[in-house]
Amino acid sequence: MKKLKMALSLRLVLLLKLGLGTTGAFAQSAAPVSSGAAETIEVRANKLSVETKIDRKVYVVADDAQSSFGTASDILNVIPSVDVDADGAVSLRGDGHVLILIDGKPSTQFQGSAAGENLRALSSADIERIEVLTTPPPQFKAQGAAGVINIVTRKHHNAGVSGRVQGSLGNLGRYTTGSSITYGADQGAVTLTAGFRHDLRERRVESFLIAPDSGSGQVLSSHSGFTERLGREVPSVGLSGDYALSESQSVNGSASWTKRGGLRTYTQQNQSSDANGVLVSSTGRLSSGHDPENDYDIAGTFAQKLARPGEALEFSLHRSISHQRETYDYTNQSFLPPAPDARSNLAFNEDHGIVEAGLDYVLPLGKVATVKFGYGLERDDYGFTNRGATVDPVTGDEMINPSLTNDFHDQQTIHSGYGSYQAVTGGFTWLGGLRTEWTQNEALLVTTNTRNEQR
Image (cartoon, rainbow, N blue to C red; front, side, top):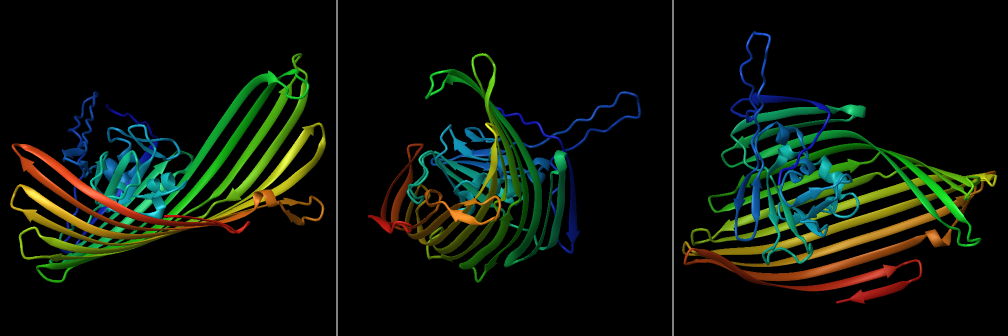
């Protein structure tokens, strides 16, 4: 299945080479152009190369213009069986229950309503490959009924100093900029990245309905129109590195910060008419607000090679935090019947944190079999607070609306252990495994002091 995409944009990239550093060349090429009247330009681009394994399909991101300028959403959208809708939501084989991982670890950036926006903020130039697991092996947690999508970032760099500066310009004032600089040596490398994306989305929704009024039984025709304008400004900074302590020991780590926010406005109009076309009601609603979000992510890994070839022990630690704040002001208008404007506001606070620690052991048994064991500890903390109020149009005083005000906290702890055995028998590769999870969940509705515990 081949997906086609249309976009209006102007893109520019600048590759820098300093010292002993090297940078990749474009995979796109143009045929020679003659000086005659008829000119032909041919553009070539590499497809995603695919490797099929027993438990996953691995799509290696090509070093071409699309990969240099695009985002994670662009790359996912060209992978068969993966779909990304207009809001950035990801589905696998039509099922939206997908677990998205970065280098095998979950991140608060790719969970919840902001996941699609954050996928657009992740540059495809930083992605080495994408692994699609429709039947995940036991080392992955049970979340994600449709499967797991693991985004593996680039970590291998040449010796010396190299850098990249890139930009993209689109219609309606859309643009993205990004830069990175890498220092590589025999024992490791360090990369610093920074980027900024400015986006604008507009949406118009209209609905028409003909139905009897619930009170009078009179047939009414209703028309509702909704216009939304959503601005996005997304700065990001990241630092990553890896270092070989010895021939048998290595460490790597990463830290990143991303901010997402902008002005969000919408206008809504509602009108109803009777069977004779006479207008019986007309109302409107205006809204303006902001929804800033800050995401922080830090991870580290220590790997130890053991006595046998391929035998290894790895310890990992990961922390991911997301803070989202939303505030909206509303003006409710009634033109027919005439009535004074009514004002109100609504605020949401959402905080999500993940702490993970893992220990994984790999033991090859000759050339035809591999055994894996591991233990993982995960702690999720989630808090959600919403506050609604009506505003006096004369004094500006706020009155809290209890039906729109709430405070909810949730804490989940997961202990997991797994074991798997993969072998080749008679030309067939087979994989078997077992995963066990002990989950403790404590939810507290602070507003009513209602507590719920599950184990």
